[in-house]
Length: 128
Image 1 (cartoon, rainbow, N blue to C red):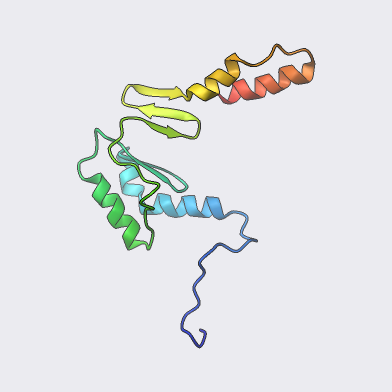
Image 2 (image 1 turned 90 degrees about the vertical axis):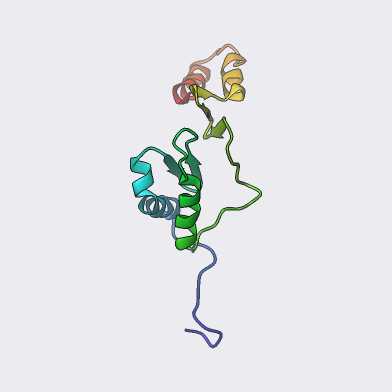
């Protein structure tokens, strides 16, 4: 307690090295019922609501966020889009594919001349 009232953190302490994991656990607890229906996907601070299963889930997501003192930045959110880029992949109703930029990097990779070059290339391609 301070003379101005209760002390509240506005940022995570620098020594909390597991803060992304803690935040993901919190998001999983908030959205566990929607994640189980596969209507909502959450990865840290990214939330995806599937189009086909929308049935008001967008409003439910906003209510759950507000109930837990979380909010959506207006300039960062997208509503009712058919294609979403997420962690180097593109999700769309037809399926999941790689971002064109990432595929282009693999296709345009120079021919390896040394073992180290082959290892670098394999590290890149094993991810994608």
